[in-house]
Image 1 (spheres, rainbow, N blue to C red):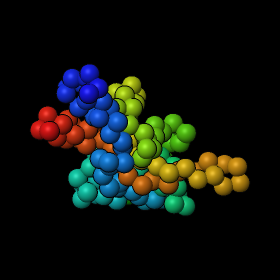
Image 2 (image 1 turned 45 degrees about the vertical axis):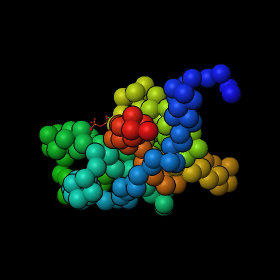
Image 3 (image 1 turned 135 degrees about the vertical axis):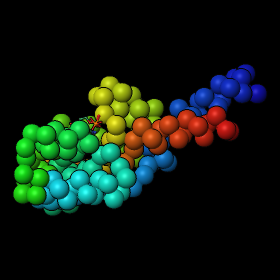
Length: 151
Ligand code: ADP
């Protein structure tokens, strides 16, 4: 007997849940995709954040508000590529599969974003590149919160 209460044991287990266990499928477009087509992709996939790649690696993130801003700002959304309006690396807050959901949740709150790309790091000629393998959002974390209370 550990001397810990049952509640404490459940809480300890919850704190150990990893990002990889609750990740969802990322929605990804290439940097060259037009703002218009990226907006269509956001609607079709029913997400609030799209990850942007070039040559297969993460270069940026684009959110609902980024699209609204470009539309009211008079951007020619059929011509301008999403790479122009996105938030760009290295300013992207990342998550890794083996980090805890608690740590990812803290990043989301601290940086005031809705979701994080889950990435795998590759080093090519001494430079870091990130392959997008998933997505963790406020929705995943809220779902986990509900599941936990049903244990
Ligand atoms: P919205 O503002 O559309 O509701 P967010 O709060 O997620 O969505 O995005 C706010 C700003 O932060 C946007 O400019 C977006 O490009 C950027 N952003 C979103 N996710 C990330 C992230 N993981 N890392 C860095 N910046 C992000």
